[in-house]
Length: 539
Image 1: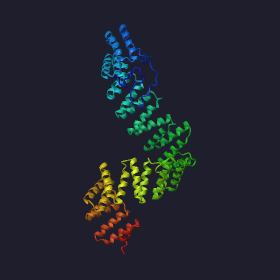
Image 2 (image 1 turned 135 degrees about the vertical axis):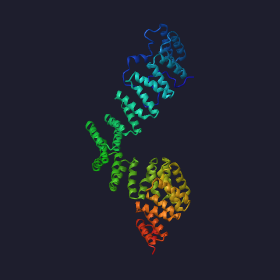
Image 3 (image 1 turned 180 degrees about the horizontal axis):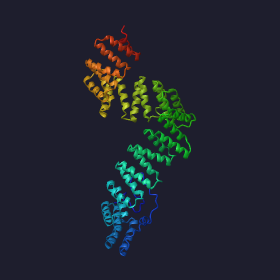
Image 4 (image 1 turned 120 degrees about the horizontal axis):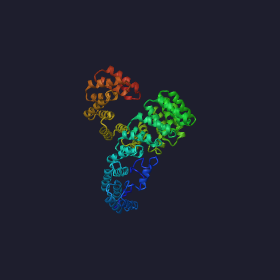
């Protein structure tokens, strides 16, 4: 029974049977007279072949091309009986065995062929191809390297080695091989692109930057090349180099909105924010700025606390690009900065179904509904966000906090247990779990363990210092409680809860005078808290 993969490699012009991106790519070099002769199945047995052996060999070739591989093997074996030292005959027998599903016999005959002539290019090619089909990539390396040594200008062999290196996750070697092939055939830009892609995977940003700079020079119309180069230049702070490169592209290829937008981003990133902002704003005002760069301009304004300009940009993004979720989201960020959660709901809820697959839309709606105490809606949108990113730490933390606030502690505790199990370095989970327990006055020993873990992970976090201090307070260890909470206030002195905690500690220490001082300080930061007001002004 024939295997579907058992196809004659002589009849197939492809060298490599790989599920590679280069499977359809052949060398652009013209074939030599020698290789053409081989591909035509007119292989010379030797300079003075045995006439009878040649006759049997040609009959075998004819039968092989007709697909009658068993009869072809018989004819080839007759040729071998007359001329036993001809490697080409063994190679032909090997291909026949391969096509009738006997790869072991095929490989055995290929090895005999190579024992006759270790540099038999045809036998090496067939062996390499068969090993690739059998997924014996390690074994395929040797014949491909020999082929590469035989014909150093043939890129097919170099690409095959690069692809094998990629499969073995040896990306550094793959990059070097792609670059080597590209040096031989510089017209094949896809080789350079592959080298750049795997340089990025290796996080070799300098090499990747050089490669994508070259790619953007060769194909400036492919904006993605320049995007990647520009981003790498920003990460490496090579601002001047990147700005000069884009200006050179403009001088050689003409100006474009995309070139100008990239210049604007680079100027902003380099610290020349006004130049960058003006370039982007000019394009925006002329309605020639894409949604991507409009978002960059929005972020520039938002970062500089110019909420009015940021809001205008996002409003115009919504008008110009109603199908792009980023306009709505950016507008919600302005509202978020202004603590206006009702407005966030009003702008995002109507489009939440349209963008049901956008995590950020669902999550920020969950946050906003939570802030305005519409808890069922908040949980609904948190769950939607989790359906998109099931292990989102931010969403899980937000849900745990909400469940804690509404007293559904079985659910909040379950989430905290999950967070701690999944990430033993999640200081926030340890801290919040400890604070939840101590506020319930439950499992104080366990709360102390979690609070200590949070402090171990982030020893200078003022919130975590307050938590462990509050646990000690509830355990009547007033001395330790005061030490941790005072340390928290020294780091951040404007938290009403922490200030109130210190007031409670001082009151329990019979220092009512100083306790009142801290209650009043706390009230200055939380004037809506009626209970705190009674503590600060008992009369």
